[in-house]
Length: 168
Figure 1: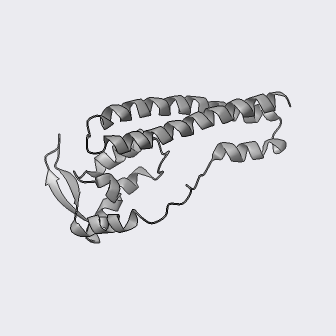
Figure 2: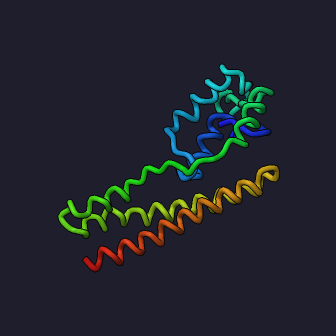
């Protein structure tokens, strides 16, 4: 959350929009968390808020405090772990022997194609936004590249699963 607020600050609506744009590939949480967590971080002294005019009502805008910057700087060098994945398609594939037949599993996996295409479109839009953020553009493009590689890997995996199950 602190990394998303970043140097220029952000409001909860900005954070929720950023997370919708990445489609849950790099972090998945309920949208309500993107509104609640900044309040918690402000209580802890990591963020400071101010009200700014919005279209209809004032909006809350958060910025990092010195403590927030320090917490972020202390956290960044901590070794990263592999991501935790909750992959419903994998569980369905593992249960293929319990299904009426591989066709049921193939049908359930087909919906992924549409989601993958939609995510490609979200990355296209996110890259347009990245071009407007020169201080973060390089880092955003690297994140988007990993996201696109993940999409490509899923597309290749689906191709392989479809070939294998079609032979069953």
